[in-house]
Amino acid sequence: MQNKITQIARFLVGIVFIFSGLVKLNDPIGFGFKLEEYFSSGVLNLPFLEPYALLIAIFVVILEVLLGVALIIGYAKTVTKWTLVLMMIFFTFLTFYSAYFNKVTDCGCFGDAIPLTPWQSFYKDIILSFLIMIIFFNSRYIKPLFAKASLKWIVFVATILCFYLGYHVLINLPVVDFRAYKTGVNIQEDMSIPEGAQEPVTLFQWEFIVDGEKKIYETNGAYPEVDGEFVNVTTEIIDEGYVPPIQDFTLMKNGEDKTKELLNEEKLLMIPAYNLSRSENQAWPAIKKVIEKAKAENYRIIGVSASGSESISELEKNHEIDLDFYVCDETTIKAIVRSNPGIVVIKNGVIQQKLHWQNADEF
Image (cartoon, rainbow, N blue to C red; front, side, top):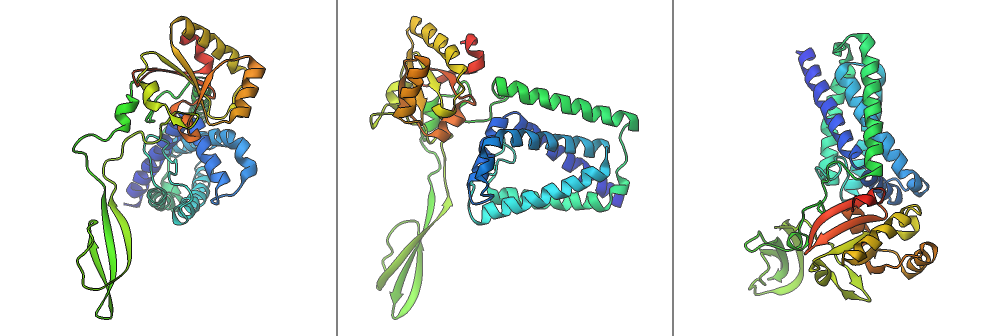
């Protein structure tokens, strides 16, 4: 019986670690952004690690995949079980602290594929920790699935494949786009609330003094008809209702919202760069070629950034590039394309093409 339970735990934990690692390895830049959020917030408060967030992200996700592989095939079980325990102690504490103090709203455990709140992530870590403890105390039942001589080669091949996938998505874009701004999405439609959609449900708790006693009356918003003295009202969201996939896409120019105007363009080339001072210098010559080609094909061409006028002027001076820049939220730009700068082609609000700057010749 113990052996059967241990094998179930072994394969469940292994599969979860491989899946979790691969989903994040598909988008290491996104996971790096999430680590930056942890480093800069009160969760870890390690701002000096922010410049190394991407490197740490790649290391962590590859380790996650390899631990899952090692556990399933039965390779180096002592090192594997101890590493699993130490990782789960750290991440369980991290998710609890983040959830309890409401520091990070999305843990990033499964990337954008399966968004989890910090509390959901904490409960997930508790279950995983329980399964890992079963494995830890019953590791004698973990037997190699293949000949011992072949195990290290399986791990070696898995390592090479992980590094290849990580390199591929860094110089291109994620293989699978789980974000709201994937190719084919109609931005305007995904920002709107369809007719008949579930409306938010809010519970109002009204506090009155009635005949000298404090009483609470609950309504869905209507002011209660109570013969007493009103004291206070508190609200609690019971059901958020329908939440549009895209909620934060706005393109501003001189304080005016130009979003609708731009999304109605037949041919719009958007060059998003969430932070111009952190953009890659070698990217702009390639971007200039795209702009020239787009001009010849009568595209409306805009730059989109959260950077200020100083950074824009510096870009124009250093790279002799002429772009009509619009302001957008930095987090939104990061979600649109994992390239700084990137290339996005939009037709009547529909995303037609997204490119990393290194693939500019594919425009």
